[in-house]
Length: 122
Image 1 (cartoon, rainbow, N blue to C red):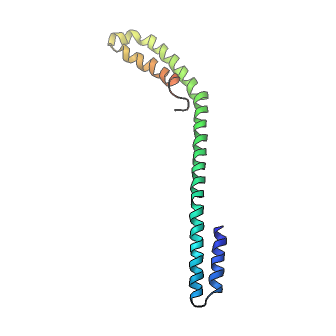
Image 2 (cartoon, helix red, strand yellow):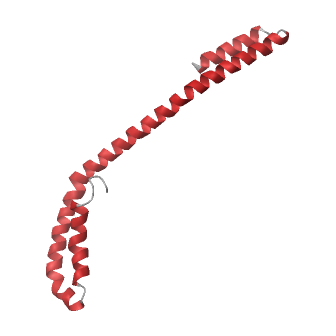
Image 3 (cartoon, rainbow, N blue to C red):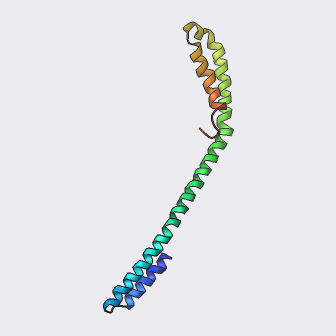
């Protein structure tokens, strides 16, 4: 569309080299091109926004799949292993006075990461 307008502009200016006719034709052609650009500009931004939204949707769905198939099972394993380490280390934690902190770090944090957070929030 714009190339067609540019060709019309060049054709009109090349054929009218007489007095004020060239200036009038050039002015009309420039006004026509400016109107076309102003009408087409929102279409370009709308297409760009739609492409960006589509890419973000694909990225989010990919994160959800990865979270469901890889991260959640790893979180379940981490919760189980953390519970086993907590049971084995609880006598030492009790002697050190930090059993609550050990419980939070080894059992609650992996369980919260696995079961509480939204899917795809990696």
